Length: 195
Image (cartoon, rainbow, N blue to C red; front, side, top):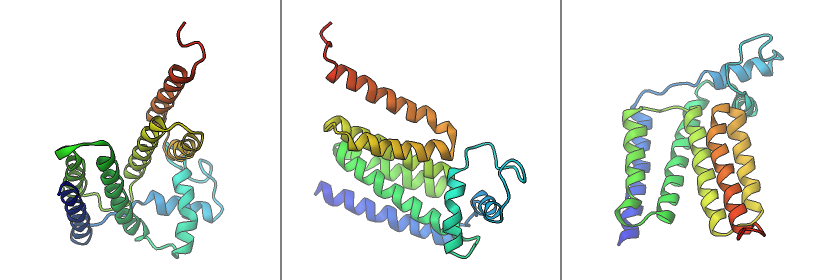
């Protein structure tokens, strides 16, 4: 019965996000369109145009996406919907795995109300993208702590690199995760831990 409630809330959250996607105004993340267009035309960051104050990885990753989709300004709006659905699914997965009882449903309900209705985030936005990467890294950290192996920290490094080189302020949260891994490794596997 409890699993059915979680599944129903997941379905409601996806339907709610879909309704908001079609009913609320959509916004274009202009940096994800204009800056990749400049770079694809041969212009250079910080020489020919202001590339912004953050690292440009996510904007550079948008070049092939925009090229494939024909440089349509509405690309970020559609990507925003898929990013929101990805966030809902990841929050559901983490909640079901690590929380108990009624607490399994609270994060999904909170995200659905906060993100869609209060923030009216109907676009592909770097903050949601980075939040999704941080959440994925936290999930990977918990998986690694339950079953330490080399593959998970390697994957965490890739996720962390994409996050940090998209916006350097994520280095704080990624640094905290790295310190947790380091401390956990030293206390669990250090040969002289009794000293």
